[in-house]
Length: 361
Image (cartoon, rainbow, N blue to C red; front, top):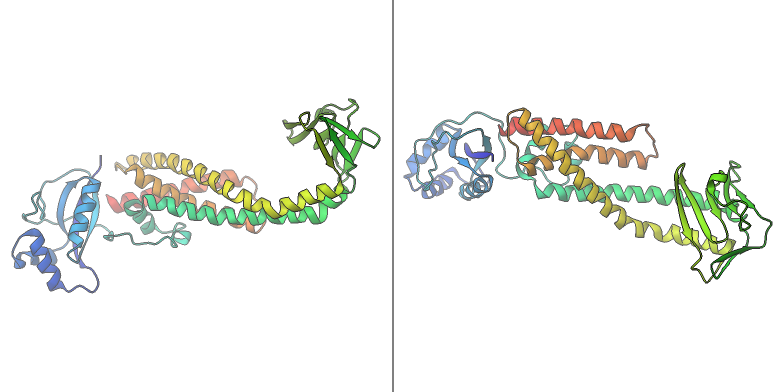
């Protein structure tokens, strides 16, 4: 398990006087006030070493309750000499290795990852040190935004379908009755429905048994005596068994009403489903990327906690999620964007892990 040490750089919290802070530090260390002057005269000073992460956070909070600020730094091994001893009393201070300062608390808020995740090393280091569960809150907020964009795009597609493509197709639909699981129509069969713009075959109705499979036709839908078959892709079909339907009537007016209802209610129904699925999928992806992040850190001879690596992974995914939503919003299609997004996320993961390791080493 990684160990940590607390380092004081001589900084105090805003609106606190140095005299008051020194007096409270003297009470904390149980020493004379003039002995605290060494903390401020020759920073940086190691306060404690060889601490577990939770212990380091607890001691950090106690120290900063005096009005001073300290930072948390991972260490490869313990040197055993600290100012703040195991029993709370002082010992001879020694200088700490100079590093970029890490604030005593989280430096960035939930609104800042939307642009800092694209370029800021300091941001990724702060995420590794302080975000943990908050990173998943950020992930949920990003997915709320992107899912909203996807639903807007879906609603636009349905609106275009209703206004342009659906009416000519609906006009070709005959009266269809299903009685005791048997389909009946009053047109000559096989009956073909075409897309008027392209002339492509859209649906076939055949209850005579002449056409029994979509493999016999290029249509998307096939209605037979007791089944409705839909072609989702070249080798993917879905079959709906109609034999259990006692009575159903389908005509142009009913189909039009179905589409209007779908246009009205589908965004509200799909939004929570898409959001839930996306959050589960992206969370699993972040856990996998977190494992990769730990391996990247170990290659630099640094042990990064899994929670920190997962937090960095979520931020590495953020640029891809935002760019994907933007492309959908602008209705732009990029070939191989799936592969490109994956490589981009991995690139940001390497960038973020390196930044975190450089800050915490």
